[in-house]
Each structure stands twice: as structure tokens, then as C-alpha cells.
Amino acid sequence: MSYKKLKRNKDQRKALLKNLTTAFLRDEKIETTEAKAKEVSRLAEKMITLAKKNTLASRRQALSYLTDEDVVTKLFENIGPKFQERQGGYTRVLKKGPRQGDGAPMAILELVE
Image 1: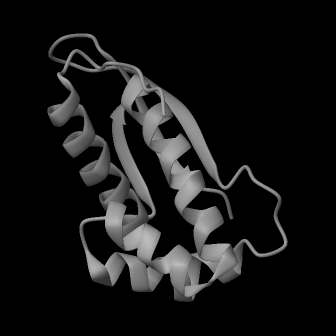
Image 2: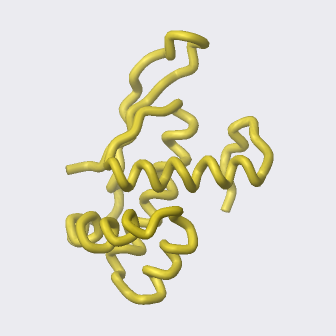
């Protein structure tokens, strides 16, 4: 998969995206920079698509990426069935404005109802 670099090396970027994706699926809403939100959105969409399949193989794939088993359970029992009829577009990125300290563009990433 190709990602934006996010000014990090490969291992740091991978860990950051894993943790942000896990946090997003746990809380169903996070606030982060626009670039990170867009990348996490891509990954979360793929995880939700796996949850919609609801097979043992897809659950194991999700477990290999997400860092918390409880989040995987929530993904497959609550989030996946909620989007069963929807053909993609499970997340929404709302632009929030610049961050106070450094002016980085911020965004809110949330699940579509």
C-alpha cells in the first residue's frame, strides 16, 4: 500500500497509523491533522469492509493490523453490521481549522451515521 510519508520513517509511520486506526475504531471519532485523518480514513474503510465479510480469515486479518482485540470484537459485532447495506464511504473527514500552536490544519474523523 502507498501512504503519505507524514514526515516519519516506515516503522514509525506504520505504528502511528495502526494506533490511530485502532483509536478511531474504538472511539468512532478522533481529532488529528488533516493528512493523518485522510490516511486513517483509508485504513478504517478497509477494516470496516473486512468486518462486513465477517469470516474467520477477515477477523484474523483485522487482528493482525489492529492493536486491541476488544476493538476487533467491536468492529465485527457493532460497526460491521451497521454498515452492511452501505457500499463504502463509512468515514467522514471534517476540516476544523488550524491548530493553535503551530498552525497545522486539523480535522475531525468520524463514522458516518
